[in-house]
Length: 145
Length: 113
Image 1 (cartoon, rainbow over the protein chains, first blue to last red):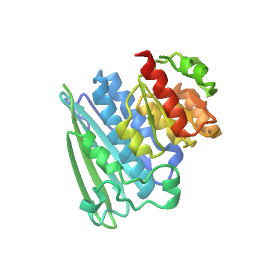
Image 2 (image 1 turned 90 degrees about the vertical axis):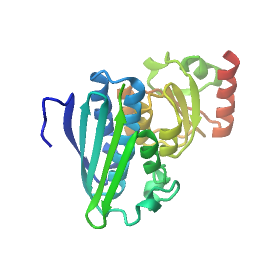
Image 3 (image 1 turned 30 degrees about the vertical axis):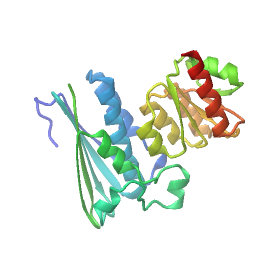
Image 4 (image 1 turned 30 degrees about the horizontal axis):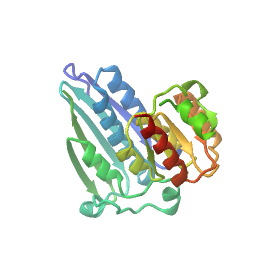
């Protein structure tokens, strides 16, 4: 991911799978970057929600992921590309309440089957592709005024 | 209404974030599922939950909640307290169950408006 002069911001972040202690660090960084760029609060909060949910999914299920944040005039793009088990049935995974989370994850209040729904609801455009045994690729787009 | 008014009215025990009790509370949300809270609560809300682990601080901070109230005398973990102090998120403890503390806070918030 190269940086171009046209981007207001372009940067990458890494997420480590399985580490619930550091869950939220990447979304917190994204939030503070967007704030510093002067993006309005409601847009920043949308970006925080979608990036947090994606981060929790990586921590819960994947080995690791790279998050690519690009900000251009009028648009915030967040891509999350993980190395993990992938999702066999995306339609099923998108259903509210469907979850493959284990007991440990559920005890913490995660794994309610709402994460991908939140991502879809709080993005202006959302694309998900997945390959079983390889990983999942999310792209969330949020428009800015 | 400020957090400190709620603390006084309901006798809550303040565990951390004492310097941030002047924050304005605009509403509340009760829940233990983090994605539910992520999706449905709003900034300025007080969050009522039984979850005590450090991930609640990330949720409250990202959503810009006024503070967190733990129910049934649940105690936050040490990591939770440290993170909350750093993020300036007040954490309070109530000995009441979620239904009762939510009702009392609802009454306080609606009586004032």
